[in-house]
Amino acid sequence: MYNLIYPQFNSNTNLESQKLFDLLINYIPKHPKEEADKLLMLSYLNSCDRPFERTTLPSHFTGSALLASKDFSKILLNHHLSLDKWIQFGGHADGNADLLSVAKRELEEESGILTAEVYDENIFDVDIQLIPANHTKGEPDHYHLDVRFLFVTEADVKFEVSHESLEMQWVNVADTNDYNNDFGFVKMIEKLRSLV
Image 1 (tube, one colour):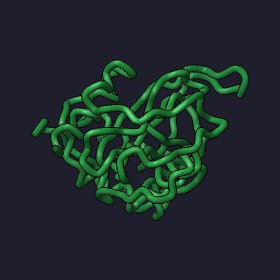
Image 2 (cartoon, one colour):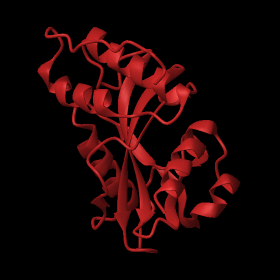
Image 3 (cartoon, helix red, strand yellow):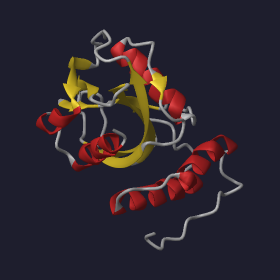
Image 4 (cartoon, rainbow, N blue to C red):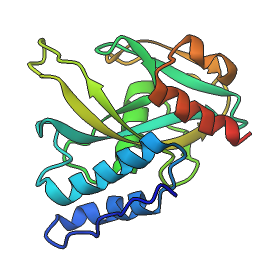
């Protein structure tokens, strides 16, 4: 589609990365930035010894979960404490190459919701984001190579706000731009709208 040549899986790369490599190869981006992000992620998997560790800088993989109601009319947004912005759930892999399980773990830990189901085990969205330095944690500016999955649950299911969040709220998909209008977030919501 964009005439890019994808790398082959490097047999010297940790075999735990093979599943993610295959998921990324089969992922069909909807936007040129996603195509570029996908290519960078594939190359990073082949070139980095520890791509799933939060201590690997200047970038590392993360797993995210977008939680929607089963009719896709609402999403549960998380007002993240450190980033001070409304986003989906997600976080560091801490060495786990299975980013779907990372996304599920983060969703459950951050929201207390245990009834969410993965909508599709394939990747829903990819986005490379610059994370600002956090001097309290001793972290410099770095990049999250974020692989996102879609989860669904009953509308307005009860949640618990974790210590990582300021608040949470079920939001109509039509109103999400009032909470976050960053490009990487907006393109993910546009994909959700296309499922309705």
